[in-house]
Length: 234
Image (tube, rainbow, N blue to C red; front, top):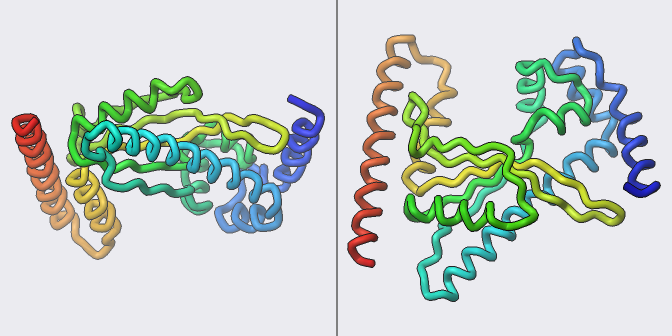
């Protein structure tokens, strides 16, 4: 690490001390972040750059498959940076100190990239190709396709570390990558919207939870049938 990088890190550390109080409320947390705008700009920039790196890697793989005469496995790619409100709730739930250094160290899904594929096999093939790249470090892997969540949620989750190359430094940044089929993404998007309806009784919530689980299982069956059809055609 060179002198310029060290100086920048020290400046960033000094700027974030203003919002490192352990009993800070959400409004105070957001207000303190607003006052430390420049350090936050650097912080968010790191994750935006990491997203660009990840997206480019998947787009290159998709292009390569196309040139080989194969169908493009990727339907679309989405990305997001976690909002400060969501970030605050997560650091409170985990008891993480209110500093950018602690947040960067302990929260791995500040940046998220979602890759939506055509078929289940595409997910695993893409993931293998992506993880084989020598500048990608796998930190954690959760396969909710083979082992779905109790509510029926399915997706392949990868927590990876990717280097970003800045003017005077190379910096490793964590990114959460989710790979899922169109059917999985359709179900997850609707489930997310329905989950935040607050005017339902406990009985209604139980009923709808069961209905959503049935829909998830039906979507999974649809994915398997489409994969079988594809295998027969091939």
